[in-house]
Image (cartoon, rainbow, N blue to C red; front, side, top):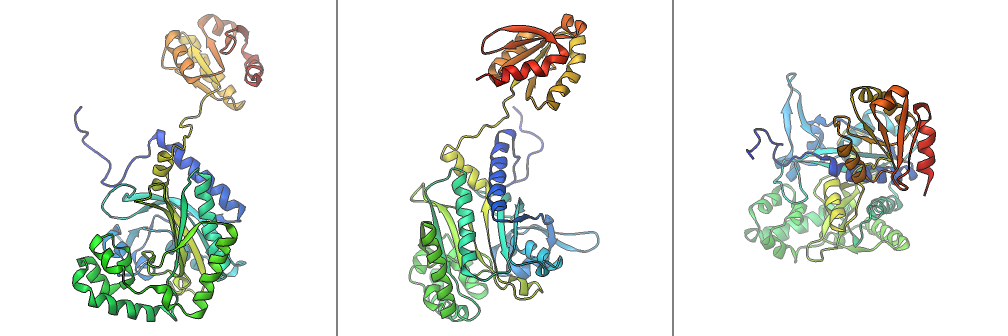
Length: 426
């Protein structure tokens, strides 16, 4: 077979019918979970002002430096395809005056995001995320509830072996002290770090902990830990978060080198991993507190916490743990027709069945009864309607009960009544 002339762009993919059920299942599960906690859905534009992400994510991050898709419009606007969801939602919160609403404001989203990174297992240039944001509350119970919601969401998708990794990276009071000590350590080890990490020393030293280079990992084993430099308020906040997790009996580990990759995080950061493969755990969701983001975007000081989950990674994990889904809606009835007049009469009858909410399969492009009945058998339907020329003329139809193999002829006006009798049978 010749290679097709056009293919999907690198790192982007079609969501084919056999995978649609996974996306629908995940979105429906997310919706059920968050609606219980009184979240409202929000959709922000796929394109945002480029500077929104400079101000929020940070110039020294990989996302801004390497991964954003950007464009200039004919009107000279400099835009970016959104690489993440929190900054656009905070922009919307400020722009739409949500600060005047009862706080906290709880919002959730589900949709596509874009990052120009090397395509690999579980990573795409266009990917989908489910996320939640709780804006306008600084109590540690919000951090714990954010973790709880994402943890339960993953559990309800049938995923097991989940563990929460938690850390605190402090706030504006204590983080500068920690940053100073970390810089001192990294400068002494600079020659042992990769080129990217050497650059991060100047721009964003905490990002060195995100490096996957094995050599850098060895160097960082002896690096100062943020938890040792927390002020009393941040220590108390972290202690409260962990106590809530203990009360919820959510398994967690204190991960001193967990920092997350965006500049707007403060205090609590977390990731939820699948430890099914002990040697290579997979991060399925993550988030944390971002108390300074509103101020950075021109709003007031608004304490907030949020999290997001990668849909494609979740689907891959669901398939690995054999979380089987029905990939197609199985019809209750199959409609077979024979001859041109029967084919003409078929569409109005099909609409009558749709109005009665009876799921119907058909092969109207086929004329042979044998081929049509073969498809009905493969589908496993409970009944088959057979409309031939004679039946079409007499306004009758044959109904075959596939369980009993009995076949009756009824008036077309009685189709729904007779079918519902068969469909009620166990």
